[in-house]
Length: 365
Image 1 (cartoon, rainbow, N blue to C red):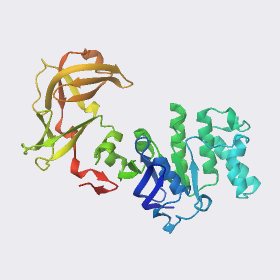
Image 2 (cartoon, rainbow, N blue to C red; image 1 turned 45 degrees about the vertical axis):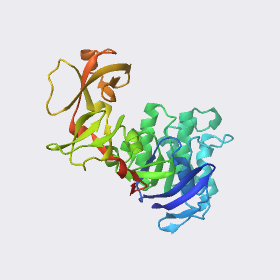
Image 3 (cartoon, one colour; image 1 turned 60 degrees about the vertical axis):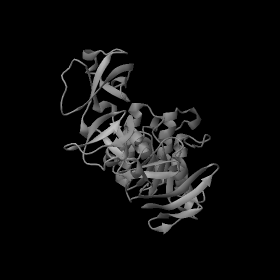
Image 4 (cartoon, rainbow, N blue to C red; image 1 turned 90 degrees about the vertical axis):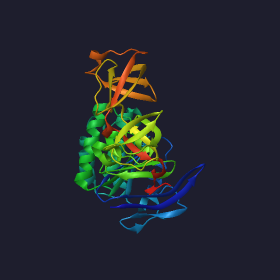
């Protein structure tokens, strides 16, 4: 089942979806990303048939279903808040849709038992859902949505309430079921790990419009908009202007200094330079310079411990956030106020021309 969204617009209160277009290929896993308030859940609900559009159309396998009610679209939906029936047991919740479809008892029991086992819910089968933890409720909601074997599934942050181990196993299980049953899945997520692990396609939206879509590796390595760069994990986004070409690279002027960027760009173009925190090296000022790297001097402002090591704020001609891996930190031991030197490779700087930021697949002028 392929899902098509063609120039869809609608207004809910003060928020609008504005000419949204995207395609979820048949039997694919698409992850929809964006900051809070981007319109991701509203778009999911609109595809599911819970809101009436004012313009455009929604198609399923090429058929216009824009006026169809939810029950006629053949799409399963899992909300972030679970939406389980508190007066039913776990087993009864999962069985509910099968009963509504008048699936024979023996087939129904076999399907429910398989899902209970797949999602590690067998010990909880007779429990009422009100007594379950958030993670347990999420697993029940996923199992219930999959019970009727819908051709397409819409998931609103389905793994957000799970502990790391359960989250990992549930992601593996959903991906395996998607492949086994040939499901078309569109999932809302804030997590790049989920996108890399699950998605065949990533779609990034903000303020009611689609900004960029494509393979996860492509979108995250070559963002075309500052919001996409933030989603992609570029902690440093600097605004400046390109200068005349210098050898094999292009100078990018920011904070009154030039850093060399790999590749050729039009001269005197306003751009955003995107640099990941873990692509920046730090050293003391007495270390010899490396001529192939961009070298910037300044001082340490602050430090904070992270899961990966130490996150450091640097202030020089422009501010930077730097991530120092845990295995390096004990040998370096920088202190706030210390004079330091940062090194950035030209190929680790990604430029986005401000006049060329992509919005809904169209280059903004």
